[in-house]
Amino acid sequence: MTPTCRTATVLSLATCVVVSVAPPVHGQQRSGGVIASGSVSADPDTRWSLAGAVGYRFNTILAMEAEWTWSSLKYSRPDIANPYETVTFSRPRRDLVSFTSNVRAELATFRRVLPYIAVGGGVASDSIAYTATITSPVARETLPRTVQSTPYLGLLVGGGVGVLVTHHVSINGEFKWLYPVGAPYSWARFAIGTSYRF
Image 1 (tube, rainbow, N blue to C red):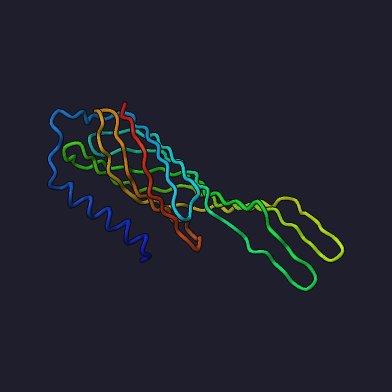
Image 2 (image 1 turned 135 degrees about the vertical axis):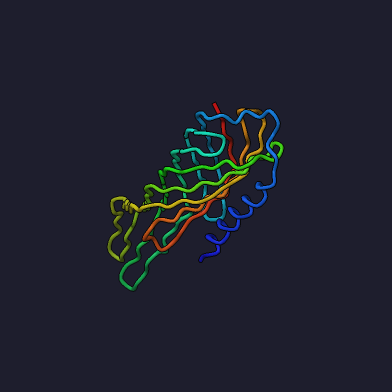
């Protein structure tokens, strides 16, 4: 199990343990209804990441949601040089986009703190783009911009903690781990955002 996967598992288990003994907020509105949320993050491997989700809460615990995430990852390509020519790469870009359907469980509330976990799956696309320039002793040529996109089945697990500002609004800190099935990597994001319960 990778360190990221272990972190996600420990976070989920710790959340369950903490909230199993936590009393609910007196008078808090916990009925079903539509819930919408959004978050933003950045880390050493990510220039920025945006996510948005819309779902429906069936009861005080379970909800189904559709989540869209767009992340601009830090990416570069090393130049290639030999005695005959040099290939340089400019304007490198890498985007990871996912769309997943998640089951979200809002756990017992401790005062105004609302832990939750989420698991789901859907589609993910890893796209890279760059412009290559070939320089030789006799010529210099810039090739058309290259764009490559690879689709994956994406599996998602994560959780977080919301701090209730009102009965409808919460400020959230969350961790999400995405595994593109068949890819040689997995990806995680720590984000801050907000949710609104209609």
